[in-house]
Image (cartoon, rainbow, N blue to C red; front, side, top):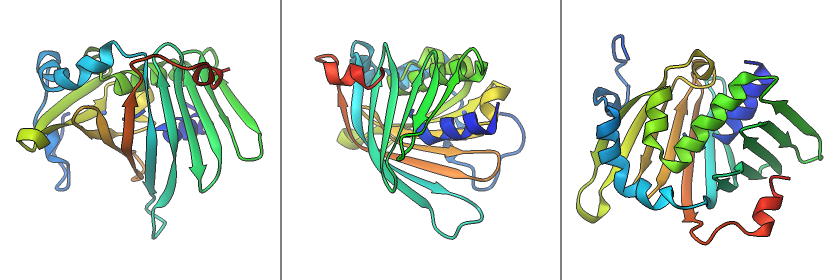
Length: 225
């Protein structure tokens, strides 16, 4: 997988992969492996309304921590997940840029209007990444279990109860993008944390997510043109 593609995939972060000794600071969720049936039971209440929805819309706040930098890199923006089209990721601050991931490829446009495209026929990893990001946004546990070793726990109790899922990639192509991910949520994913093999950490907060139960608008579809 090329460095350019790796950077493109890390910039979107849909949202959100064992063996060996556990590190001292490893998240507790990785002590609780899940098979597909157990994952279905854990995520079923959250996944049910998403199963029939054509997509999601929301805002994101992203913090990327690099070992050589004293402070995390902060960015904010909005996203759109359209089940039949792809993921549209619009960063507004600190620089305006757009990233689009579909089953056919990935492309990005920077603040100056320069565009970069990577086709799935050029980089087979793009199709794999698209399948995985689509599964993350849709909470498709069967698809996730095909590509990842899965882990999960229930968090909180009563009205504040939620879930936490850990993912570690089975595919070497995705291991080059991130080593593991931890996803927190309740009715939908609210936080995604990615750790890569170089020690970089990316945290994505989703403070506002709306299920598009009434379908996509014409403007939504134009974003993917």
